[in-house]
Length: 91
Image (cartoon, rainbow, N blue to C red; front, top):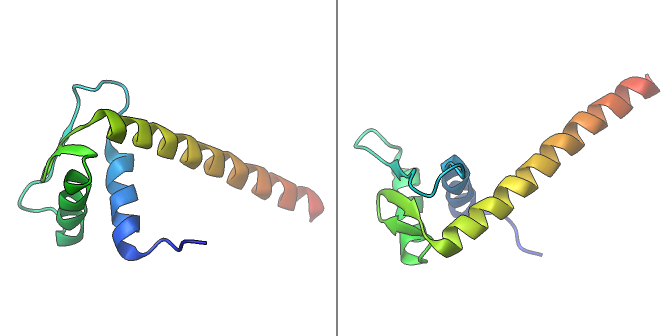
């Protein structure tokens, strides 16, 4: 089983910031961006998931990955709400 190290965490965090509403909506990491996010963007660019080393747009593969990530996060959010509701019923 793979663990999510800090590099992967930052890459996932950055991918989650992209809007999936339009492929024409990208992100730009400015000078004030955390070094860890800038490094994550550079790695995602090297992997062919985003168009520019400082953000840009999702590539086709990056878009598909970001869609999957959004689904995972939505399920986890729903599961967390359900777990809280179940816990409240027990008490």
